[in-house]
Amino acid sequence: MHLAPRLGRPLQQALQRSRLGQQVAALPQWRRTSNVCKGSTMFSGTSVNELEAWLVQNGVDTSQYGRQLAKTVADLLEEQSKSESILDVVDGRAQRIVRVLSMHIRNNRGQILYEDEQILPDGRSRRRNVTVSEKLIADESWKDAVPRAVREELGTVLPPDYEISVQEETYRQLEEYSASMSYPGLLTRYIFHRVNARVTGLPQGAFETREERPGGQLITRWVWRDADEVEAIVGRFPTSSTG
View 1 (cartoon, helix red, strand yellow):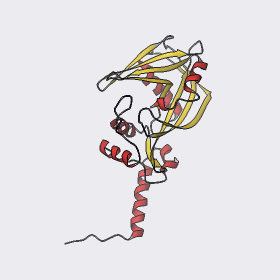
View 2: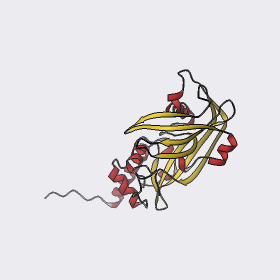
View 3: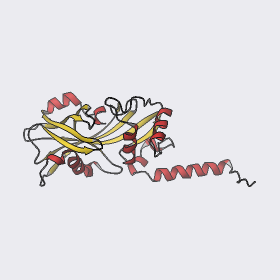
View 4: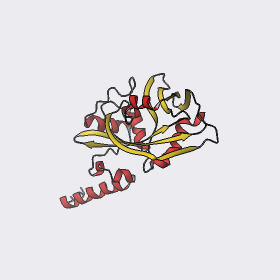
């Protein structure tokens, strides 16, 4: 019988550091510079079963995922595969980190566009209570995300020649920790990039957008609200309703 030579402990540690270094080097820049990347506790699997096992092992009860307003473990895995978030273990518990563009789009009356409700393809209704929001992807900057957010969230009601003007002087960044409505029991660290903007061609009254999803259409209902009304409802920044 042929036995492979046993590696000494120093060499084993060196190999472990090398593998971790390769994992971190493959991450987008914002992940590499985050404090959560200083260990080997980040989720790096590729299957729903692996993710569910990782969540349970790190203190998250997934029994309610896919029920009522909660998303599924498969949804969370898809978010990971798109580089829209990372998962790590902080103080012994799983934590989700998400960067979010939060746009306050105003109309000619100074009102802010407000995502009021979503009707999911299976008929479930989710009250959103947020302004136009979009998760940033990998190394995407908030400025680069603006046209994508407008196109993806509002494109079905906009004319071909619409224009976006961003008021960069209103930009603010804030980090908050909150429970996610989409993933119960999973503490989420939100890094918000908030800015005011105007978009030409939007309906001036309440309207709906429709997006094709597996199993049917996602219907989003939008309303315009006075600025003080928005601040009273969502506070400084949207949190758990962001997703």
